Image (tube, rainbow, N blue to C red; front, side):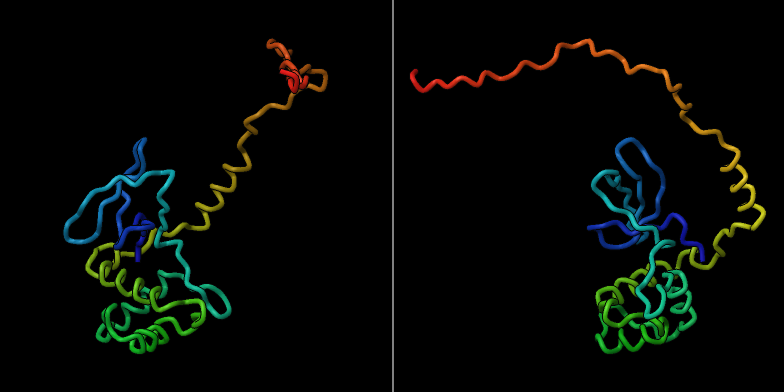
Length: 179
């Protein structure tokens, strides 16, 4: 399952595909039938990549990709997000048996099931995620170790630049009671 470039945007329902970036923000396209394109402001909008999202687990956190794969394996009986709470909790115990029931709320379960219904028809959902081979990891590690430091160390006898502006004047502290 390849979820690279699929993001959830804070304050907006649904999922978006990251199309590009400009000076104003990220260019996103909605995954619903309308295919609306928006520009999300870089400074105020929070984006969460579906690849990086984890679900609270009892022992260790569960990856969303794994939970979505389990939901896909349970093809016939995926409930709707608006179904009863008890049905949602029972289904979620099947697809994510090690999730922490106190920390994972019903709203989180509804959101994940809604995301599944949006993603199940996409070709990205059925294709494999690009994997990094051990050789590529070794090359990246070598590149990092070969890079020179960006800043060169200053000699010990270097002087700080002299200030050209006048020092700030002290405020007049005289009392004006008699005036």
